[in-house]
Image (cartoon, rainbow, N blue to C red; front, top):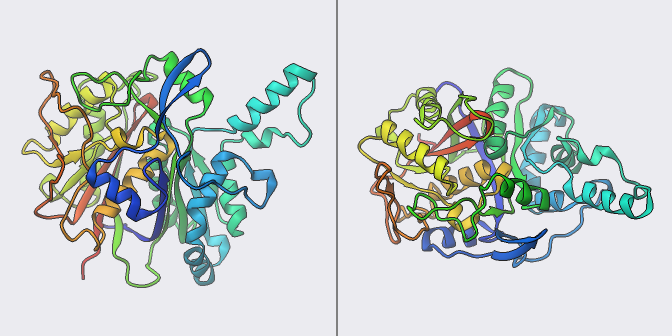
Amino acid sequence: MMRPLYIEDYNLICSLGDSRAQVWNRLVSGTRAGFVRKKFGEMQRYVATLDELPALLPVKNLFFDNRVNRISNKVVEPLRSTVEALGAKYGKDRIAVIVGSCDNGSEASLAALEQFRATGSFPGGYSLEMQRADFAARFIADLFGLAGPVMCHSTACASSASAFVSARNMIYAGVCDAAVVGGVDIASLPVVLGFSSLEAVSPEPANPFSANRAGITLGDGAAFFVVSREPLAKASLRLCGTGESADADNMTAPLADGSGARQAMLAALRDAALSPADIDYVNLHGTGTRLNDAMESVAMDSVFPQGVPASSTKGLTGHTLGAAAALELAFCCLALSPENAEHALPVHFWDGKYDAALPHLNLVPHGFCAWRLRTCMSNSYGFGGCNVSLIVDKVTE
């Protein structure tokens, strides 16, 4: 545990709610919310939306005003006092913004394309800058007046997990002293159509690890953390281990033997100086696709042959793509919070139909409480064999 990052504060939003308490209550009770069936082109698909939550307010700098940044604004604004305290300690040029996101300005680009087709010209004020990969990160830097490094990861489902790895590397390389790090994404038209073209979107809500699984359900969501090398005060949580691997076997499909995922988990354990027996809960990537769930169950069985409580929360939240890793790390933090005195864990929400072809995992049922809860792992796997495991634990004296 040579290079931990202290978690100063964090916040989140997803289809389950826009507060820690509301989201946590629904995670442990297995209450699905926000899943609606919408029309995308000529087809209808379920998505996990924020539509049932209070309306998102436009951002003050209208140049950055789009749905992705309005979601980010909702999540990061409550972190302002922590960011300002770190700015006073280190200087605002020593705070980085590192974001994982896959939506590169679809709202602006689709509207601009529609007007161009109708009139032959783009809307006034439209700029390709609105489609830059780092647009979501630049918004947060602008919002807080930060002048440190600004970057965005776009490695599909592992995007915001990679953002945490970069945050730690940059802090310990001396490039910055703290960071606002996390992810944000939306179930946009191009994303839904794109994944549907891969035959990866389920016609029914996602059913991770079930024999009846048929693909993912896409969703809106965001989670952001403020992290630092040295805590401002007494920190309760830290990111104590990270592990990455790149199997690059296929543009979209994972290695079937789970070796890439296994390498990432083992690397994170080594980094944190922990053994598999030290992990009390694993938040699975668990997308609900046949290939991913099969690969991950094999990898989990190889790293945790004695079993460990585990769940995929995507059956409750949908797959929030670039935001998924940060959101699921936030779920681990909620599990480790002092308020969770009973050691409850996020429910694995599915139909209960085990796939006999897969190794048996200890999927968390309703009402389950862990006998010990001090260290959690979260796994994320993206296109092109990008595998990332993150470990968070309680800070002990």
